[in-house]
Image (tube, rainbow, N blue to C red; front, side, top):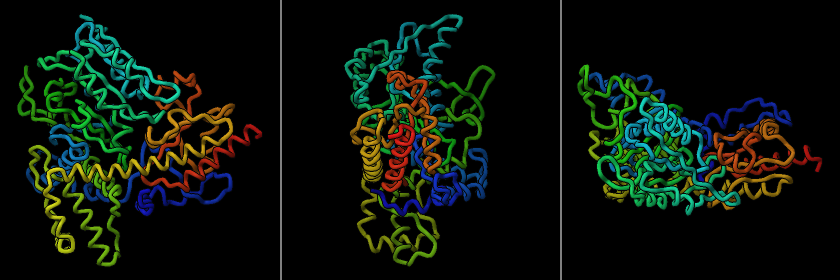
Amino acid sequence: MLDARIRNFFPFLNRQTILKTVNRKEKERIAFDNAASTQVPLPVLETFLNATVDYANVHRSAYDAARLSGMAMEGTYNTAANLVNASSWQEIVLGPNTTGMINLVALGLRNQFEDGDNIVLTELEHSSNVGPWIGLKESLAAQRSPVHIELRLAPFDKATGELDYERLASLVDRRTRIISVTGASNFLGVKPALATIAQLARESGHIRPDGTRGSLFMVDGAQLVPGAHVDVQAIGCDFLAWSSHKMAAPVGIGCLYAKTSALDALGHPIHGGGMYTDLYPDRECWREHPWDFTAGTPPILSIIAYGEGIRFLINTGLGNLPVENGLPREQLVDRTGKALVTEQLLSRPSGDFPHQYLVPDELAPLWKEYTSLHPDILPYLEEEDAPNTAVESAMNSVTLHLREITALAIEGLSKVPGLTIYGPLDAEKRGGLVAFDIEGIPTPEVGQALSTYGIETRWGHHCAYFAHDRYGIKNSGSVRMSFYIYNTPEEVAYAVDAVDKISRLARQV
């Protein structure tokens, strides 16, 4: 398990609120709707506030505030690149959310589709990875010169939730323009074998506009990146999309990793200020990536805060608690030093990133003291693979924490009378969530009853229309508990007990 003291840094979890609970007592809120949005810790909130105080618009001026805001914002692009092991910070595009980034890819590919092409998806998908492709299909068919393309859906095994890879392979052919799949289902929790699918894409026989062979491969990483080590080079994907608000950072930031060759071939679906080196009545002269995909003023403050959110998550996975006021000198040096190690690793220039990290002047004495106690740190910081190694270690710890929490939930819920868990019962084969229903009790009633215990869950189809339809519960939906770094075994035990009471009371068992 991760260090439970990390909960102290989340105001949401520690705010005592009078809830309409069954025992009418003040209770801490149990946040089990993390697949939708996670909570934001104090260091990230402080970064956002500090950035607000020092804020100026970016890429427009040379005065200090504008320059420093620009450096801090651009730093998040580089940090995100190191998070997923991109080859360059210029392979990272930031936008509003995962949905927005998938739409950017779909619309950017619009002019490449030809009559008879197809797109391969799966029945596991969230609507964010279905709607953009359906919309593309419909808009191409509605053109004055129609282009007709096909959407193909790979099924999954209802008993295990696992994709049918043989069926998936049979759907991919030389006319498959792109394969787009979830990295982790937000309903069943299953994690498809992405490297296997990437190989199917490479071997499809499709010929791209630049003459290279292979279908494009996109991963919806909204449920994957927050809780697992993701190495885009090891996966072999062309695109990966994810969001800040599902990994302890503010809403409003969607990330897109796009392999340089894929980004070069992508059209520009949006147009506006900040994207050009020059502009003529009949011609746009694009800036370099990623700014040619960033129209207008970006959400500067949220982007800066997201960089701190990534650092907070990696430090949490490494067991590094944030610095607090009033720490004894020894602890202050230790925590500051560990935080600076992470910051330097995640600030390692990716590609030709123009800004070199420097330890802040006010922390230099503490850093000097830390390195004198740990002289091996300096050569470690120079190791080529150190950033990816640190991220892998941290995210593997996050994965293990979520797996242990999920295993406890599955074990407890499996004993509740009338309850059905959807997806694999082996926590090693799923992400950090459990979706279920209880025979004879409408899911809205279960969700509402849980809220009276202070347990915050989500009910409905979770935008996973196709998967719920396969189980015949598209209209009734399921109840979903989803977990993150601050959830504890005690919370799971309390929630399982509450579900059991709700089931027994309604069923008179």
